[in-house]
Image (cartoon, rainbow, N blue to C red; front, side, top):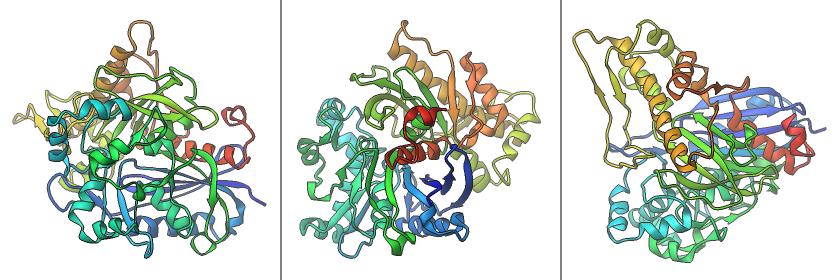
Length: 460
């Protein structure tokens, strides 16, 4: 008898799988990192096949010898905008995935801006012309990978963000689908008409034949393939990571706000059924109401947040693991005038500066390792302050942001969370379960397959 919902949280640096029981509690968890590829400065890639191999291995680990039939439904949440192009016949990718952080299409975005296209793109998609999003990544692959262009001309090429890629593999190639939250991050989807847009496809040079079908975020999309998963189980939920976290935090009503501290930092405000535009550097995107149906959201995206701690660990070697960062930062009274701008891949909201790069300033002979580590942590909070200030400016005096719900791996850092509350001047509310991204995917999937009967049951 089915007794769990399986959530697959495919992030930027690793894959997390969680089994949720009827009470919404985590029964088991499995995690593995995967390799980051940096072929040139500013370029970031992942191997889609490795992501699938890691995911499949973790499925076996988390089931711990139980039959896959104990799973009532599978929910998927994913790093958004990361772009995969594959051959429908062979089911093999033509190249590595281009990650959302990758800056290789910045020049193309500048060209499109210079040609006066940004107003059209903004009006239809709610996004800005930036290399962050998928549209120019697809175009780059078609222009620079001959096999992909040939396959596209012959109708064999398939495009997807990571959710689409995982569903393709889980379903044995039977499903080529995405959901509105991921489609809304491509620069190719009209978030008001709720459909792929021919004018945008023409602008970016992307054939419509590449695109997945847009289905519901909370809907039984199809079944897993027994060869891929071990049994036929409903795939019943999809949402981009930030929208999944918003749902997992229970922010299904207009005005509710959360901030996720992951590889990047993402503040998302549920704006309801009515279109809302930002005049202070934020994005309009799609999220989910309590039934998983699309609603509008305001979003602020910071490209480098927790990733700055990973950089301290992997590139500088000044810490052995992320938890050490708090210990070192507490060893000094303050940052001693040292400030860190972690613009390794440009600056996101509210600046949208593709050419910005990282900087550490205020160094003196008295600066030590602990000051740099503390400045790195503080940079996460300062960038979040920028997002909240922009939200306040967009919302105006009539709407008060009185608290901030938080989630993501970095929120276990007490020093960071207290510093965040201090510079915002409002309470920061941290849940007992910080895995709210996966929780949101589980809720969406569980509601669709009737594991839970209503959002009221989920909320409880």
